Image 1: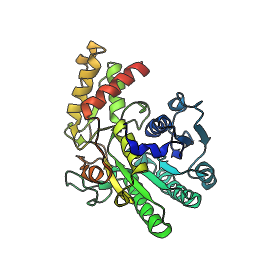
Image 2: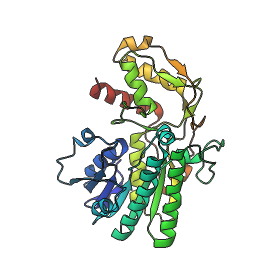
Image 3: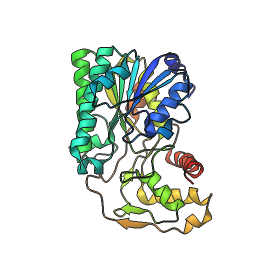
Image 4: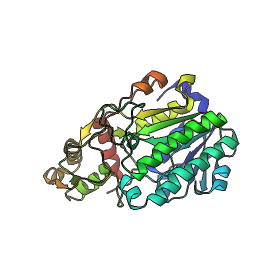
Length: 332
């Protein structure tokens, strides 16, 4: 990403909330490569210290251990910051169904705390992780930003409420925001363990152990799987765009292509078999559909292309090869 517009981030101070998480830690690394000063705020509820191992001693990196549910932590972290990348959240539809109160506390109350802290600190721009779950029961494909359905989970509600709050904070207090609706992000550092692990790292680990991954449903459900470097590009574009029309909007952050779960497992098996031929023989099993899941997800990325010059660099195959290579090297 040799984009001249990113040069404005040199020596800028950027707060990344949830910076020890999968996406957050990738953003911290990208910003440091651009010579930004980076502050990471994380409570390590889902983030991991090992995600920061490569940068923890970097002279331009500061770690603040704190919680976005605590306004004072938010104010401390955002002090003197030029920009905020708000990644901190409790992800996962099933988690929100099992515990809607905590998801709401983190994703809504924590979000408002961060908006208030950013407003009071006078940050130039507040870019936040929104979600494709906001499209809810809308069956239209591809998903276009201004046409959403009704939410299908507590998590989806929290992420939609974030968008509403961001809009109101701009109208009421003048803070500039951009929301990025992430579509099934995957890649290096994504946690394969735990009850709420995402499908790609979970399946990779199963294959590596010669265990059968379990597809929810018949495998025809499809997703716009988005490699993490595309997401990094979108965040950097959102931080630095000089197009006034691009501000105070939400954008699909995706590839604009979809892959069903059967195709996904076939690709994973193929790429992993290059490292271990025995994986070719591992069978795939099927289980029941998961509550709150939408059947199909496919984004239009035209708005991001037109207003911010976004061009996704990684298609599913390229991203999966990179991700599989990383998992093989790091999770043996």
